[in-house]
Image 1 (cartoon, helix red, strand yellow):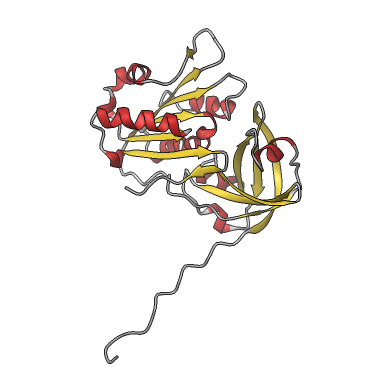
Image 2 (tube, helix red, strand yellow; image 1 turned 120 degrees about the vertical axis):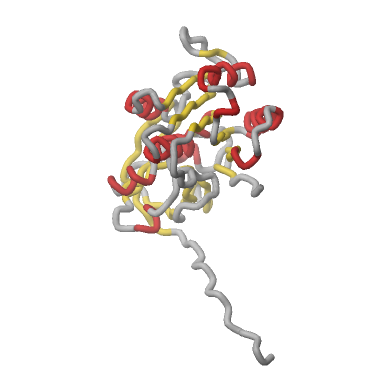
Length: 269
């Protein structure tokens, strides 16, 4: 055994649930709420990257339930205000989301794991053009990514294509509109509604023709630096297949699918 080191690298500490009291509960769509936790004295919860999620743990109907929810505020805002905020939309048959959306009140204490996840915005030295293709509550991490991307460089731009059933079901719609209004034209949002016809808003579903139309005046898919796909598996699979057919390199495509149990980390490429 001479010359062989028996020393091992110290293992990373295993994340543990911390009891946090709900500080805010605000409606952000029909059957959806934003839930805020005061973490101003808990740096482990403020040192996160845009796009990450936290896992909540609570007793719901006598059952120990754990479910992940994405943080919708960028790190800069969370650090400034000392509050992280997640959004939860009630899912039929879900174990935790209906309880969060309908019953949770300020003061409720639940276990929360520090932020995790690989669907994140990387550092950038210069301006970048981002495009998000989003369905339903998939807007949650993409809203944080969008805000952080606009902060990275004064010339960075974002186009978001956001699919929902109706205006009322559009999660974080008001927050998204406020960010667009404050962006000075650097953020453009194209809403697509499948179950409501509204003048001036696209009706139907996201498809290649719609995506091309949105990007025509910025140089098409070739002019995009980063693609952010988030939502139901079908939407992501269709968008990813189209992007592959357009020759978009896989390392420019970031994906995260949402299920009834929360965000699912993207596959490693």
